[in-house]
Image 1 (cartoon, one colour):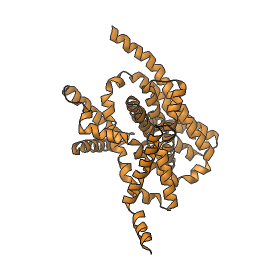
Image 2 (cartoon, chains in turn cyan, blue):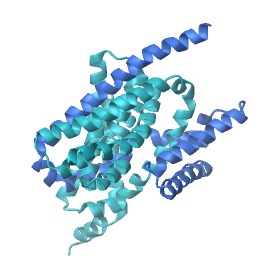
Image 3 (cartoon, chains in turn purple, yellow):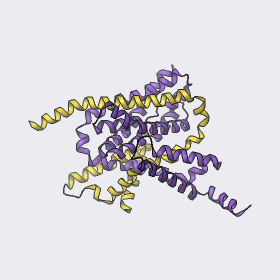
Image 4 (cartoon, chains in turn yellow, orange):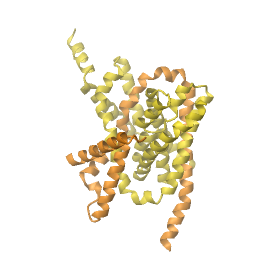
Length: 239
Length: 130
C-alpha cells in the first residue's frame, strides 16, 4: 500500500478527521450564508449536509464511521437546549405578557403540523409506517424519533424527515412572513419554532433575539404537546 | 467557564434523570432548560441587584452555543445518505407533504399568534393606563 493510501485509511477511520470535516463544511456553509447576507435560501445546515453527503458518498464512508467523529458536535445539542433558558430568562417580561397567544398558536400549529403532513402523504398513498414516521416531523429529533418508534414508524426515517422539515421551515419562514406583512417578531419566531424546531430556532436567532427566544419556547412546548397528541391522532388512522 | 459548562451539563443530567425516572414524554434537555430557567428566575428574585446573566460565563457559553445552533444539526442531517431508498420510493408525496405541511404550519401558527396577541396586547396596554 502506498503512503498516501495508508494515511487515508488511518484518517478515514479516525474521529478527528470526520469531526474536522463537519466543522470545516459548516464553516464554509456559514461563510457562504454570511456572504449572501443571511439570505434564507443559502441555509448553512442544508449546504453543510449536502457537502458532507457528497464527501461520504465519494469516499464510500459508512455513516456510522462518520458519526464516530461527528458525535461530539451532535452531543452539544443537549447543552444547547438547556442554554435556551438564558434568552428565555432575559426576555421573560415580554414572554409573560404573551402567554395567551403562545398557547393558542401552539395548539393551532401542533394540530396543523400533524394533520396536514399525514393528510397529504396519505392522499399520495404512503403506507402506514411512512405516515407514522412523518406525523411527528415538526418536533425536535429526540422527541420525534421516540414518538415514531412508539406508534410503529421508522425512527431513522423520522430523523431524516425532521431535519428536512427544519431546513424547509428555516428557508420558508422569512419570505412567507414578509409576504403576509407580519412584522411581529414574537409571532414570526414562534411559528418558526413550532413548524421547524431547532433549525427554525437557529434561523430565528439569526434574524432577531426576540424571535429566537419565542422559537425556543415553541420548540420545547411543541415537543411536549406533539408527544401527547400524535399517539391519539394516529390511533384514529389505524382503525 | 468551567462552572458554566458544569451548570449546563448538570441541568441536562438532572433533566435526564427526571425524564427517565418519571417516564415523562419530554426529553431530558428540555427539562434541563426548565430547571436552569427556574434557577435564573430565583437568582434574579433573591438578588435583584446582581449583574445580568449575559455578563457571566454562563451567558457567554449560552450565547456561543446558540450562535452556532445550526452546526449542531449537521451530523444528524448527514444521516440522509442512509434514507435515500425510502425517500426516492415515496419521493413526490413525501416532498409535497413536507413542503405543504411546513408552510401551512408556519402560516397558521403565526396568524393565530398575531390575532390573539392583538387582543391581549391591547388589554395589557389598558392595564398600564389604569
